[in-house]
Picture (cartoon, helix red, strand yellow):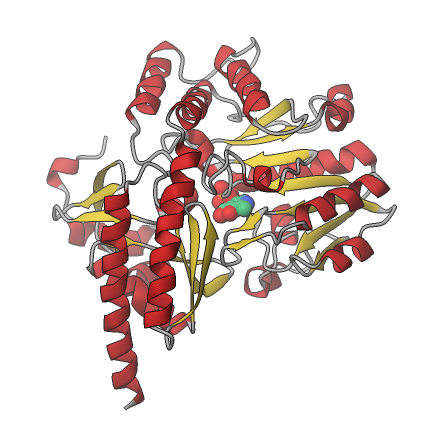
Length: 421
Ligand code: PLP
């Protein structure tokens, strides 16, 4: 077992470089993130020196419920004592309970679940189930999209830097401009297997789908018998002010991908939930797609408790209200720092600060870390900062973070001025 009481941080850094990844170490060290984290609760993360950070990155969208939510931790503890992993032969009660709960809280006629362990696996499963259900191959995805980094999900993601070294990726994946209804209508035809979209793009830089766009995709898919897949790995579980982001537009998909916050910030889990229609072919051949650890009792206990907390603590509503306060404050800062901030936007507590360059973004992140707040850039757009705190945060925390953002922008403005002189 790791001995936290005798933690030697300089040794930890050396071993990280020696046995994990030296390039990654340089990246985190530049942003002042080469400290050891030792504990976390709610929206606070503590390092080995006892410094506290307000977590406005939320583990890239994992900590909707905060760190170590007590109800989710106790559900996992109880399951750990009873049966951590299942035999995989008998029926696992927590897995079935979670499937029923997801059928209850997701929109439309999403009723059947497949469980895996991460977001990219959920996307892989959705792509395969779509191909299985209508026998077609062509997949339409959106510009700026991020769906994961395994070969299938990467084939539906739009960043050359991540794709190029692995060419050729899967065939018959075609990109359309996100938000362009005419392009969507023109792209979908009788050979289209599926359209995959994030209702609010995350790693692309926090872009909510324009009003009417998801409905347009739904209509085009219905016309040609194509599947509509919503990737709610990042936007789901209350993050955007509704339990699932697609509810904002009143559009439901044939398949929905979930992961990240689904495990309540305590266990990793991914899921695909689909309509009975999509599941038909899968039910004829149930072993065609499987996962050893998918649906394990510990992860399902965490996710079931997370779904309950989401509803009982009305976290989507809090995300909506705190998100509005955050955005109003950021709008003011955008006016105050026009040379640094290009735009601010978001939905609920999925917020982006669009900065004028990736250099400004790196400096800003380093300043924020110095000021005790975690933020990060979007993976496909390194000039855009994403703000994704726990949905449990209060108005006081929002105000405190806004004050620190103002200080950080002030410092960055000074540095940029000095660099220009
Ligand atoms: N889909 C979306 C929308 C995501 O934001 C991510 C990760 O950021 C993924 C899929 C991949 O999830 P994971 O990193 O768990 O594989």
